[in-house]
Picture 1 (cartoon, rainbow, N blue to C red):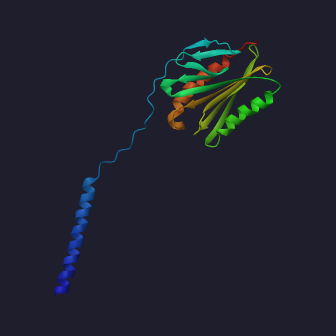
Picture 2 (picture 1 turned 135 degrees about the vertical axis):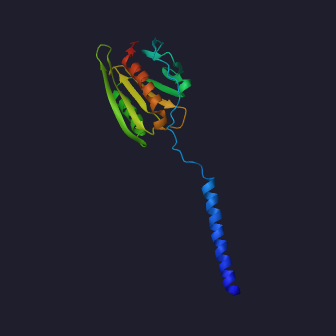
Picture 3 (picture 1 turned 90 degrees about the vertical axis):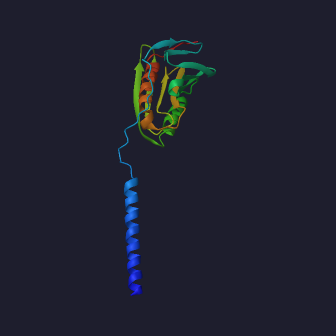
Length: 196
């Protein structure tokens, strides 16, 4: 009789424990709501450009929302502090080495394809200003999502690459990339060479 009472006691104790734990778990749960999609809430100033003229053999239109400073020689950095973005600009004179310079520009693009999902090139040609180039959009998780090179194929090559001061996350950066891609396309389309 004692063993039956002990067995019954243990069964009741286990059942009570399960009921208490179940009630506790059910009562402690919060209602489940789907997370709303979050987007960067950045302000994009309206596109307003002015010709950037300098002592180098090139000029182009630059957004008034950006500032530019020279690093070394005619290499420059265009800064968008509110967007935490920079465009690195490199100028190289052609000295019978156009193929080598363009190969290096292509290497820069392909270097970023490790995590990229696609590269979308856009050819550019303006015979009246003697500017020929390619704007590459590198889609996906890349350190540089937009790059271009431009040349007159005789004297000048200008390259530009967009970088962010944050860890690349293509989905979050996409609106900023699209905004700055327009600025970079404007730069490319308005390049003028100065033969010195």
